[in-house]
Length: 115
Length: 114
Image (cartoon, rainbow over all chains, first blue to last red; front, side, top):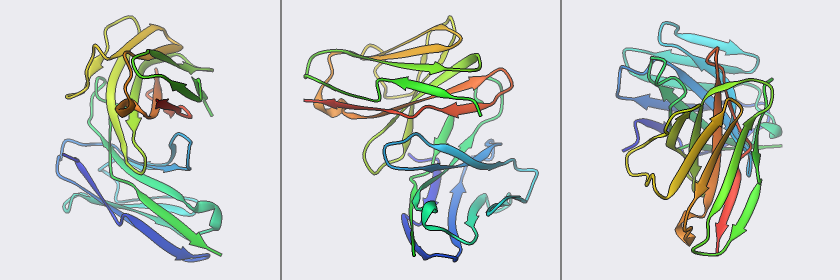
């Protein structure tokens, strides 16, 4: 049973457009929400992460919006570039020293940015 | 940033044999390492958590006798797939957590069992 639900499964966006990926979770005990980018045959790389006490975080072209009451968070990729074509995963982690780093991943979104 | 390496990057083995995958943190000491498995076009699923010097903790449904994990030092964890079968063919990815709770993923190991 997936604890973090991610949508859409795939996304095609034109160069310069905005890519939006959404995730929802049930367990309010989660306290860390990262987004990862993965290219084929490679390990995931951390893009940006947020904690529940913040509603938005921006790093360059990447923005996380977090809605604690709705138990949803989303990734916005502004000015999408062909090099952004990859699979994106949201994830969540429980608090505590024993749990930090044990990530529950969403199903992934394959993003294709067309020239 | 910190680097986590895996070796080998890909391996082919025959059904019934065992294969060992190494995960190393190259420039920091990893108090904890995690092993994930990813089937094609699917998400990453946590298999187990290993702490240096202690037994690994396995997620529900993961056979601990089949997937042997050793974390003998603060920079090295190994995953041994014993008596591998074709259904074990997957992409195995480790991540390492440092003392400041920073976490980095390795590049993954592609295992194909024939």
